[in-house]
Length: 369
Image (cartoon, rainbow, N blue to C red; front, side, top):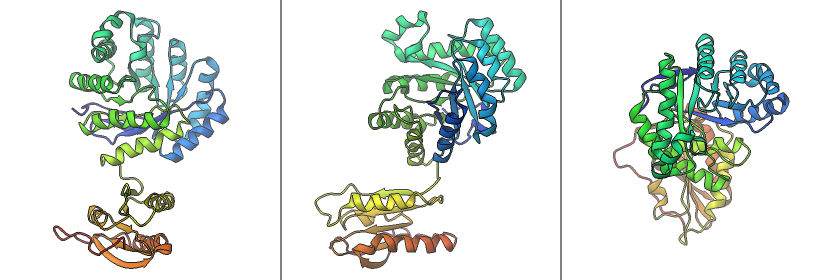
């Protein structure tokens, strides 16, 4: 079930039906303000909504005001083991603070952080990871790893509720996709608070993207989750594309173009991957939301892509350009992409009108010859 409660993090509503937000985390030393802001700038340009920065020491906390002032998007301070750093961070104007109540120094330390967060109106993120469960729950994790994660999170929730604090979101992340999915399902049935989704330590971009898409995508499709992070062993900017891709695939984001392309096969007379790659590179310059299809033959291509705004279907010497379910014209293969973008630019200049579709209307025409 979707979260009922909503918090506001740096002006961004989270939970309670708000748009799912994309988060990442810097890999720089936070006290290196110039390097950290450079990375934050690239994350912002890539489409990140929220960025978390590590605060392991006083120099990092002292750098937060300058980072917050110049970041251009909400900054979350990530604190572990030292409640005094959390208190210090809460005075810097950060949009949120991530703490683990289990390692921050005991209930009295948690209460001090919560009281300060109440005073500053700052949301907190709490939660558990499979690799950092409290000692008393580790035996449970052997038989029921998802249950151990949920139990750890609920202990933290109960502590914050006793302090009459509800301005928080929760995570129960695991490097195991099935465990992560089951833990979030159980937690969503227990609490009304916003949930932050992620497969922790997902790995290198290839496998890590697949794990994240399966785990995060499954839960979002069920209406579970309010913020997400694709945690990759890579430059954090590489996390944003897959995260946006998950949201776009589920219809939860409509930013920028959506490319549809066939996988290619022995029926095609063109190198579809090269054709699609060229179109994809050129589409990166467009902020508008629309669909473009790149197809290689007449068997499935045009029909399957009939709902795209524009598309091309390649052939041996010539290809077809089509728009809104109808063939526009046949053009030489060597100018097919250029002519596609000529039509696309003209359509955008006209205000992107979309004709009413007749029921069952599909692309017609023979291509691939």
